Image (cartoon, rainbow, N blue to C red):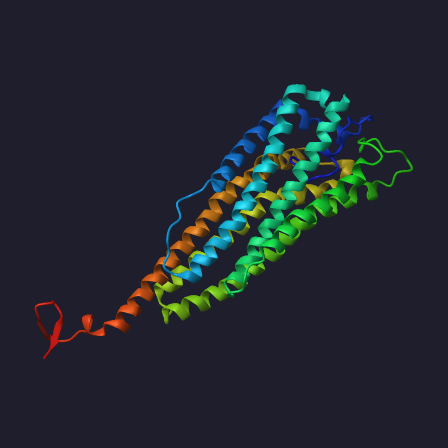
Length: 351
């Protein structure tokens, strides 16, 4: 579970296991310098990518008001997504630094235990926030291409409050009455100890994986209608324009799948094979998560910028089309293909 995704291991259990179960021995990999260096480097790359997304950029003026509005709506959500990504990657960075400095002392003292719990809550909360902003971006684009107004206050309420509820319910079941998640008494219900956090962690991921492709597919249908309405045709250029949108939406979905599929696979294996974990497979998954989870911030900065670039191209195309139509309507004789001579002012005189 690198970053936060498997609630039964790594930071969620902030005390060392007392028995010698083979699965617990395998989890010592989380405390190695090698593993935490991978986490450290990937989190730095993620923070860099998200910070680039947050930095102010030169605003390009586009002549089409409709698409300019869509671009501004998208930039607003992408900015908050990047802020959440920075916070989550920063939590991973701090945790990796602490582990590299203190090694197994991480579990042995009360200050380290408190730091472990705080960072676990921090990382899980902000990653769930990123998933909700990812979902809300697809929702808002679907609404925007229908020319429906945005709901920023509602978006903020959903993106910040629901993850807080999910994090509180999930982690409170793990940390009560103490942080010894592994060292359970015979009276403890193991399923009820871990299942709530699994559910509230992975449910948003699954929702994004299922719902976002559907919303982007519906948005593509509205984009087709917009393109054909503005251009009054559907030639090769319009088809290429629509393909650009399809490719960008597909890449955004692919990036999310790439970052979080290893976590889902890991969760399934842990639940189904806890007594006989395949060591090689688990180590591969954990290192994939160590690399890919923080890299979500970097991928987002790249993929959402591609989508923004596509919309700018469309804005300029639509704006040029509108200007041509205005010229035709206002001064049709200037571009009429007629025979005649030019007068002193340069206008055509029809013979």
